[in-house]
Image 1 (tube, rainbow, N blue to C red):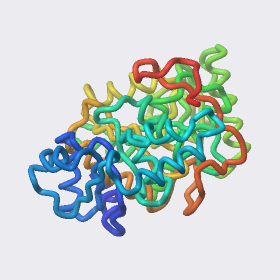
Image 2 (cartoon, rainbow, N blue to C red):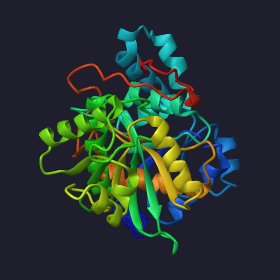
Image 3 (tube, one colour):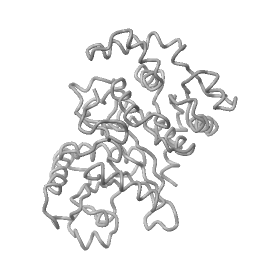
Image 4 (cartoon, rainbow, N blue to C red):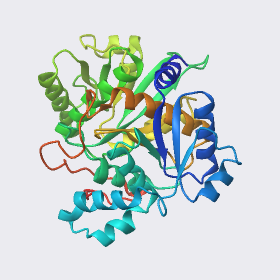
Length: 366
């Protein structure tokens, strides 16, 4: 799995401080121990010290433990949260209560520079995890929305193509319009290049290929491609394409002989969350692909989400990816160092969380 090796090597080069708000979960504790053993991270586990130590089976070497209820940071973090959220009606007493919640405490550690990234979601819902990140860490400069992707690894003998592929957006934006779809494509392309070092080739997926069907949903994808090309003319992108035309060279040559993508796409942007979420799970569960994510893009600093059904290995890989992400800060569709949360120059673009993740369709996270 060369792509995973690349990510783990990047993390090992400069081990980052990754705060794990669900420190009492044994999967997370085991992943933290492995991260220390393999030299990829300096984990910080949140929770009551006795419970975290028990989850670690008493093996806390190289792992910091912070209890939001008793930490020496709690007072200053509460004050920082009050300053950040008072315009939204949060008074100081509420900030003191809220900062004792592990997800909020972890996000504030990242915002304040006391951690380089955070990974949650093994226990908390996607809605809770993303809400804390968006409210406290904030959008990257220039970003208009937060989206997500799964890194899909194909490495089995039966896979016709092997390597790393990005599927987006599989976790957050339910029904993006053309402009939002274009933003997801651009961010995903940069994420792919930052993770793998390879040039992104973006396929904008549809039930139609090169005008084979006419529908408003096809028009949305075509418009998104136009917007991306206008913004980034050097980016290799094409659409609308059916998945087989984007993934199989012979099919691409037959269906879309003049397309810039001919079975060699490595970034697949789905037209909506239904298609993306179903697609990655079919690839994972039937196709045997390894799925790492959802990885968030568009935030000022790394904050990533795990599935509540995650394994220890899933958590370990997400820690590694978050470390590598912190090294390049491939967020908001830009690879850069620096940038402070909340300095994007305007209110965040509204996006919705899937109702299955605890959010309400069509309602923005405040």
